[in-house]
Length: 179
Image (tube, rainbow, N blue to C red; front, side, top):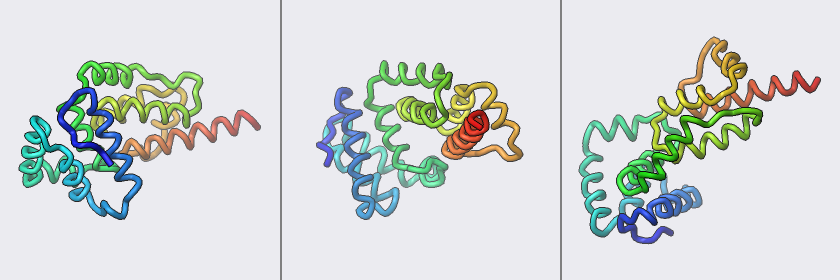
């Protein structure tokens, strides 16, 4: 269970990770996004963290919340709250480094599986939205693999579907080379 969060830059990432792991470990206790959000916000009880909580509860009553959170294509929508908390309280230098990392990561000779895992880590740290994430992911792929993807009759519209397509095409290519 996470500790009460006080807005400390040093503990921001740990707080987010604690919340994330607890929610993953007990899915039956968190049947919907609103319950997850109010549970996480419940640990933000002092100073600027309390102010974030107050503002976020008001934000939850707006149409913008509906659009950005509940209608988001993010498969795990609670991650949107984690990104907002990190933007408000995380280390800006760390975030700048994560953005630099996601814009410069390249597949190289790595398998698609390995590259996807490394990219996912960079993406989580970057605070990029899904559209920007898809753009950077395509930019990170080896040109022949990207060409194969772009030749598909229907391109994926989510980052998760891009990961699946790239892994599938890379496996097919590696299998053909092995035969």
